[in-house]
Image (cartoon, rainbow, N blue to C red; front, side, top):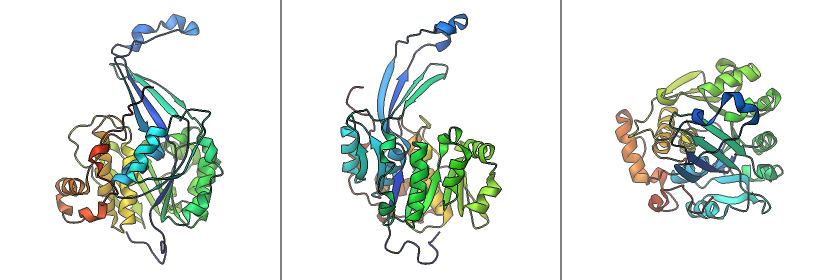
Length: 348
């Protein structure tokens, strides 16, 4: 889908404003139920001996920037981090991500998600937002003026509202992606992000939550936003543009290991396809394959691939689209083979 008019002249790339976080994944080899006495929850005191613990790079913004870099882009990442960010930063510097607008507060730690699951699939989760709000007044509008697309994803609601307005004011096509923040944001803040957006991408559950909070269902959203994407997990996705609906199949996976980060990778692939000026059926399939790579590994930044490998797998996954993409489209700034691991070496 090519840009209409002269939009994009002198512009290239993507600016990404969303959370940057560390994911702490804990495995408990029993059942939470065995450790909780229902009649004593008013004085709850529990302790779990863990079987495993991993720490991964994560966050919506970090995940999107990571997959964009694998696809050959040099996105501008915007976000607040803490004193423990050095290793994360080094990996992204090596990938070619533009980190000049990642601000550090040395007095606190980087935002972190803590997730513990038992053998029955029950999960206890908590999130520390860290210094995400310190980029509220970052010069996003100036950076957006040199970018063709900007995406605002889940982070501090104040930052989301401000940066959505600033990116749109910079003349950049805004993708608004409130995702899990729909639950906590007031309707007026969500609508303020949708109003200037050129694109909105949600999963089907988030679309339902959006309608509950704002009254905007899919049809109403399509009337307001030129491009609307809806993902359905294993059922694929839909892209709505210009009164047309394009159905996108999934790219078959070797094994679904961890769905975390799949949606972020999908957005990266879609943005990459749009930057290339490809038609939506092709751009959507790039998105689907990028998502599949992510869900085949534990952690949202554990996957990696070369341009040749990505194109070969694309042709195998979508035989009706063979030849639609070629490796030169995905030339990466670094050899990614050594970066196939988002797990951080430093102890928690």
